[in-house]
Image (cartoon, rainbow, N blue to C red):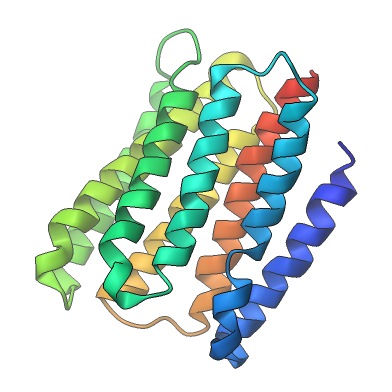
Length: 215
């Protein structure tokens, strides 16, 4: 697949969604999911032309689809729990996909993610304005940390270029910014930090899956 066909529309729709969120929120309902829908469309085309697709590729497909569902649900406050469940389920599917890498766990990946995840959980505990939500937030931190560790491990063990690790790390950072913005204190220009890293993270994870189809 041509990288420009993949990346340029993703970048443009991502910028459109970020601009909508920052400057014209009433249009955000129509633009938020566009970048991930484009990624899913191209990924679907790639899978359709690759009879050798493995369970890893299909797990990432369904994880991405659940991410889109989460995007839509979280547009509405009353659908926060369905949105949380959708994103958490997507992380579980990504986690299962990355855990298929053979060989022992790369402990450098474990140390690199467990320490900041633990520190962040403690900071949230001390500073949150919504203490009743902390159990869900901590569960989510465990899932995103495990998924990111598994992504790093998969790339390290299999000698991949690092698309999974880079994408998962950006996704991790996006979720950290989102939880801080929602449960502690609003971030300045939050859309740039949260959406920019989220779209980039999803794009890199799926690009890792696409490139592994043609290797």
